[in-house]
Image (cartoon, rainbow, N blue to C red):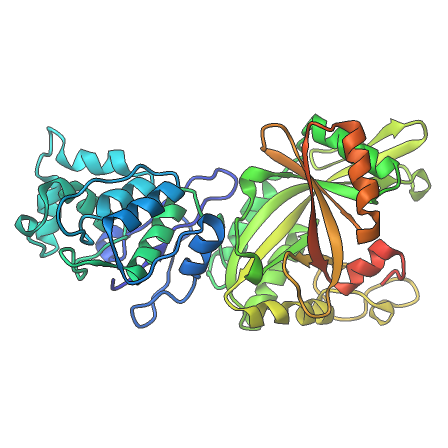
Length: 431
C-alpha cells in the first residue's frame, strides 16, 4: 500500500467519509482527512492496539478466510464466502462492507454501467481477468475509497499487517472506530474547533439530571457533567487526555500551543453541560441564554447549567501525553504570582486560564491523583452523567444514585486527575 488515508467523522453529525490516496480521487466527498504516509507505513493510528482494545481482534501471519470472517463477526459484519486460497482481492468485499459501502460497490456493475468496475481497474493498470469476477466491484470501490491501490498484490495472500490497516480504516469509515474532527497538526484544525464549539447549546436528559441534582444536593459531589454518548471520541485510553473547559478561544489557543511545542494527535470535542450549585450571594445570575441558566431546584438552593466541553486529545506517543501536564502548568494555570493585587493577570498565560484546570486520564499518569468518575447512563444509552468524587465518597454517591433511580446503569470508574483539580475536589487549596 503506497499511501493510506484516515477518514474523520464530522463534528456532531457522525457523518464519515474516506478519500482515495491518489490525486484523481481527492475530489471525492471531502471530510477532515489526513495522509499517514512514512516509508509506506502508517505513522499514527496504533491500528493493532485499537482493534485489540475495542474488539479483541488480533492478526498475525497470513490471514485465512476463517480468521478474516471471525474478525468481521467481531465488528458486527456478515461473513464473506470464497473458494480456494484466500487473497487480498477476496478480502475487498468484507472491507467495503465494514465501511458501510457495500451498496455503493454494487452500483459498479448495475444495468446502466455493467463494466464500470472493469474499466476502473483497467485504467489503473490492473487486469480484471486475473481476479475473481465477483470481487471486481468491491475491489474497484476499495480503490476509489483509498483502502487499496494499484500497487497492491491483489492475487497474493492477506498478511496480518495489511489486515490491521484495512480493518481499522474501513471500521473508521463505517463509524466503528475513532471519532475526531482532525489532528493537532492539521492546518485547519483551529477552524474545525471553532465551528464545532460554536454549535453547542444547552441540552437535557431528565432522568439523568434528576440523579445528578440529587447527588449535588446531598453533598456527595460538587457538580456533574451531562454528555451525549454519540460524541464519545472512542480514543485509546493509554494515549489520551481529557481536558475540560468552557471558553472556546481557550481551546484553540491550547491546541496552537501544543502544535508549537511539537505535539501531535487526534482531536475531538465532546459537548458537555456542566451543572453545579449556584450561591445567590455570588450575585444575581441574570437571564437564561442558549448556553447558560440558573434554576431554583429546592427551597433556597440553585443549580447552574452551563455549556462546556471536554477536549479529547489522543497523542501519538506516551511521551507526548506526559508532556501535556507541564505545558498546562506553565502556560494555562494561574497561581498567586499570576495576578496582581487587583486580580489582573500579569503572567503570560493562555486566555481564560483557570486556577484549577481539570484534565484527566483513564490510565495512570505520574504525578496525577486518583478520583472516581461516577457514571450513570440513561435507559437508551444515549446520554450519561459524570460526577467526580474522592474514592472514600464513592459509596455515598452510588447510594444516592440507587435511591433516585435504581433502574439506571451506573458504574464507578477510576480516573487520574491533575494535582490542581485534586486539590479543588479535596478542598486542600484554591490553586
